[in-house]
Structures are given as C-alpha cells and as structure tokens.
Image (cartoon, rainbow, N blue to C red; front, side):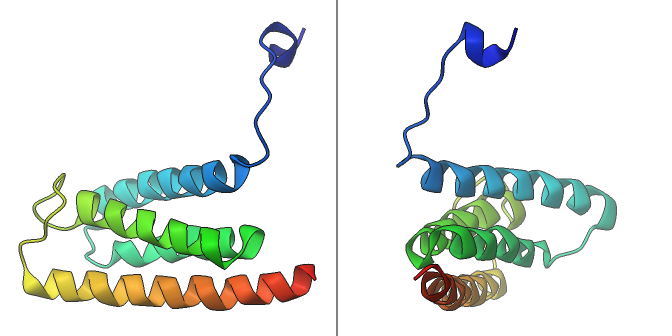
Length: 120
C-alpha cells in the first residue's frame, strides 16, 4: 500500500513552480549552513545562485526572480551578522548582498529568457 492510497494528495499545478524553488532554497540553505560550520568561509551566499539558476531554467525568469529574492532574504537572515536577523550590521556585507542580488536577478533573467526561447 502506498502513501498516496492512504492520503490522496493532489498538488495544484499552479503551486509547483512556487513550491519547487522554495524547496531548492531550503535545501541550499541547509547545505550552506553545514558548510559554514565546517569551512568557516564568508562568501557562501553565492551558493544561492544554484537554486536561482535552476528555477529560472525550469520555470522562467519570473520564478527565477522570485527565487533570487527569497535567496537574498535567506542569505541576510542566516549568513550576515547579526545572524537570525533581517538587518545587516556592516556596510561591506550590505554591498556584497546588493552585488549578489544584482547578479542573481541578472542570471535569472538571462537564463530564464534562454529557457523561454527553448520552450517555444
């Protein structure tokens, strides 16, 4: 007996393009937090380019932009001091976050457009 036989779950098709990027960002956050403990490096936030690019390829530039914004919020909350807060203490870290966000938004737009052309 399968789980779907016990609890029939139907995911609306419109939720999948939003849910998948959220899961990708959550998994990426877990991996980056684990790496942060072992490597003690400061530039892990650029790892969020991976889910942003994957979401843009799979679902287009709009979802890629959504993923870039969610990634920037997660990067702020988990990796920039003070951790577990939405503000950033050091101006240099704020500049790094702006550079990351600009790069992620540009990548999602470019890759999303390439994916849109490929799907046509």
